Image 1 (spheres, rainbow, N blue to C red):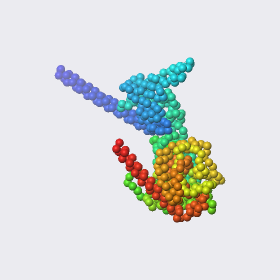
Image 2 (image 1 turned 180 degrees about the vertical axis):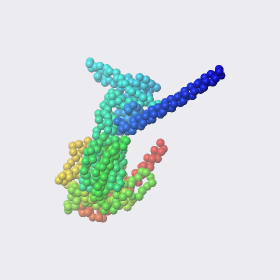
Image 3 (image 1 turned 90 degrees about the horizontal axis):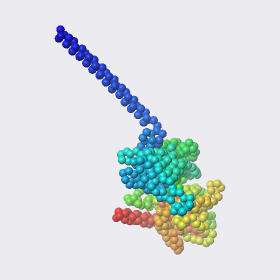
Image 4 (image 1 turned 120 degrees about the vertical axis):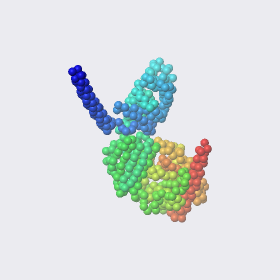
Length: 556
């Protein structure tokens, strides 16, 4: 009997344990399922968060003294944090200095003021504030109040990051300058509350059009043309009015799209049948990106393929390959007129064509600023030369004088500023208005703009002078005249060239004897031979100089 009760008790315990085990397994499975569901929900939420469009741009930039610097950053809790180095390094352009003095902080100095970035207490504290000695002597002088700037800091992988609002609130107090922010481009601008919009303008003539973008800083760009389209990509986020740009109507192109891709801006053009060639050039003097659209009339197919690339002249990197020839005047701008009615624009174009063909025979690539009798404004010719990446610029003209004069003259850009010049230079600098064909002189802002152009040409002045010496020497021998030397003058057509450039007055069309000679093929050929030989001489001089500089650099 006792044995039977014992067996019942054991059976009851076994059933109880079995039931508890099943219940526990079900509970555990339920918990696991719940955890999986929660995990899946979390993943889905994270995916949704990642795919949502962020209110921040893909890249941030700093615009300091006209230069763009991109900021190193990450986003924490929907707030950008920028690395200390990417903020302070660009500010060296504005005179800021900084350096780590201990594990607890950095020393910062600017404009005579000194600060300490305290990493323990998340503060920037002034340690020395500049005071003018004259101010100290005034009876109402009060010492400047100490500056304390709170800073939100995060440290990742040993790098220090500062919160986004430091640039707009703390930094202005540190450098004593306003800092603006453009949400469109993600650009912080030192010295301006908001960056200037990218202004653009279109200038259109019969043979060509120029689309100019006024930029806040120097930018990198690329231009691709294919199948009736052109794609301009700029390595900056343009703050540009897309709608207005798309409304531009031109006989040469239509803007089909404006895209923002990361920190880049892409502008797409549909080209018309009128456009034969597209090129671009960034004018570093005025921070302007110019896109040139040339018609078939400008690049005349009858020009014996002068604008096609020549074979390589030399395996060395530093050599002279492409010559830009500028036939003076053209179209309604006739230039000087000889006693028998000979027009300067016609003789200049004939000599330019002959020179282009001769240089091409010698292996050079040649581009002309005009191939036909068309009007090309003086200020556009340097841009045409620069956009075609020339190595030398030669402008062909014929001289004129009210006094009895003869012989040739060669000019380079003056580095002496804008001053009173001769009748010849005043004549060559005159501008022809498209309205009625009347001449006009440069505006009152010419002295300022000249100084800027002058700075750009300064690095090429020695090379321009050397080329001018070779040409003048050869023309002196040809004409049997004394050496007048190479002259300097503020010529509009030479301003802003990114290459050595000369203007050659090959003779006086106002002199009856020289006018008669300048009209003949044989005399034109002799002038062409002199200039082509001078280009060869300059090429040898340039290559030797570059080789010598390279050898000296290697020795150092």
